[in-house]
Image (cartoon, rainbow, N blue to C red; front, side):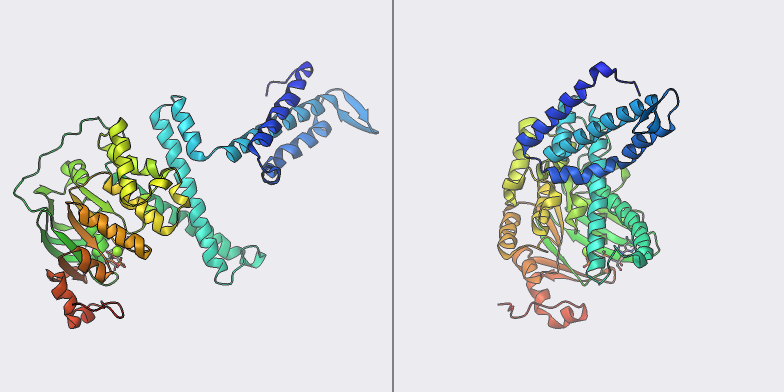
Length: 440
Ligand SMILES: Nc1ncnc2c1ncn2[C@@H]1O[C@H](COP(=O)(O)OP(=O)(O)OP(=O)(O)O)[C@@H](O)[C@H]1O
Ligand SMILES: [Mg+2]
């Protein structure tokens, strides 16, 4: 550390005065700053020890001999350390993380570094959110993490926290990849392989898949969907619906059988084009959202596919408006409610304007009005759509055709009304219409 000349000590005082002025103007709660200043404790201990451990000339202060050199070095650490901590805390208290990132961008920091900072921030948020969820889950089952005898559980919790955060990070990465992320900044004109025009919108043949742990989820799925069709995918928990959906844009692969989108085989060479054409809305919106604001998250896909400037802005605005979230454009997705997050997650995919829209449980967690409004948005889209749902009335309202999956195979395929009218079929596959709902 470069020693500050004694004549310049007044500058420390000036620095502190400027900080206090910022607190007053920005109404920063001093208690908030004070509580977090504890982070400086190790520096304070070091600064207090130096006068006793330092070498050189000794002077007597209140009858105790201390090192003048050590005292000066201690003072330097204390002054600079305190100011450094206070500046960081002031920045954290007055500036939202996404504004810091925008600031980095305006300072012309290379985009790849801003992206790395953004992802690190998102990962930190993921870990904190995961830790908070696990803590709530523990407390609500009678545990108190503050007690020493719970230390074992806490240690196990830390282990699983990192595994869970890692898995969540992996799912977020999959969602990024499905929106065209290739790790680089794409060229503005993305020209891809042209699809075969007469081919069906989706063709799945004998698709079988086992997860890496050996669990066989699909046993040979056959499905053909024509252009413009809206098809509901029904089935009990664990039937393989999500696994099927994740094959349609190549997020999962490596099993047997084939998947074609508009005549293009879903395989490595075509993935970029496939992901431009197929938009998958994940079952868990938290897997889909990872940027500091809803608007940035919605812009991520279309920007990857080459949209820029005003065109991109309009696309983002239209997608957020379509799901009724325009007024929350600048909020962090992490601070939105479950239903609001689901709507933003849908907007991130609508903004890519995919030809084939794959929705995994779109109506889960939505209030009745939002559920109906979403139905209106979806009915207004002239798109081929595959909708995985447990919401049978929703399937009836939106999809003329339904496919019933159970045990990793298609067990029924036909007009939704006919499938829902077959009480015996539904019962065999653990499905039932809601209480009081009548088909007529
Ligand atoms: N990552 C994974 N590793 C191992 N097995 C998995 C994994 N994900 C899902 N499975 C298993 O694969 C089967 C199909 O799961 P999938 O998520 O496709 O079901 P689903 O029909 O979407 O169910 P739900 O209605 O509950 O969403 C289930 O038995 C499940 O336990
Ligand atoms: Mg599922």
